[in-house]
Length: 281
Image (cartoon, rainbow, N blue to C red):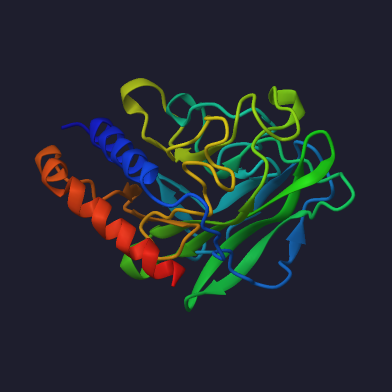
């Protein structure tokens, strides 16, 4: 089975499992690193220049076969590798035209009174050097702060397992809005809703991408939604945390073969339910 077919099968299964899991749980997944050393001034659709990641020495990280020592931090909930990105309305990662890692691709606007700024910098995480981007209480276009989102991206050096290797972590504590006014939303809801995932930026059969179930679906990812980011997790025992390992340029998915999925379906649902019940205790 091709890589893309496996990915599609896996994340379809995740969506099915998510539908039977509690949707109202609240997370405390965002890691407190204190005040990070850099910030974007209050803005709409702004970006940094190329920022040195400071992980894996000077060689950078290997994402889908391309090694980069720098990243562009974009206000709209993502980082890119070849150029800054001012796009505010998300689209499917399977068709996205440049490499991107996006914990919450939507129209973040930090100009409103009461919105935090997008901050970034290096920190130590689990004893390893990491590059962190925080969106801790950010508003949405146009300058709205009646609803605020708190989420985080952590890229952790794992050169101990091989040059260029790293981990991706998406963390969420509060997701109240999903859309900016210019993306068809009203009051932060509806229209073209946020997307969560990554892409190698290639087209057609060469595309390798992941899109979290509930992306681009109205009401799915916000607090209380069927795929609420704070009420679920992936490759983690912490609600609101979604972990990915990148080794030799590829994101490890651990996708079972189709027959294994068929046999494991009920067991996976039971284990996931039990784990989340334990998390609530």
